[in-house]
Length: 116
Image 1 (cartoon, rainbow, N blue to C red):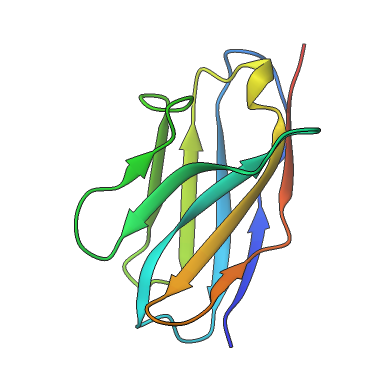
Image 2: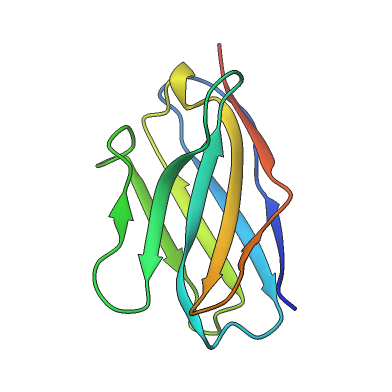
């Protein structure tokens, strides 16, 4: 069983930056992809970043160039760095892990609010 817990959300001013963390517990050696989604009020959940087991990391169009996703060497913490934040970045941010041929696990989400 994989458990994910996000942290690092909060209130950020426009133009600011933040780092979200996702603590991973459980075995993810068969992870295919892992990364981040977000969901703003009244909108569908959208992909922010997808870290692949092979190949480059993919980013959503709205965050491309402002966002870096990474996972530490121990594969127990995932990060999302975002800069030049805009009010449109306001959303609940969720981390996930997709097991190859298996389930997708989600964290509970962390709120990010970009406002002056």
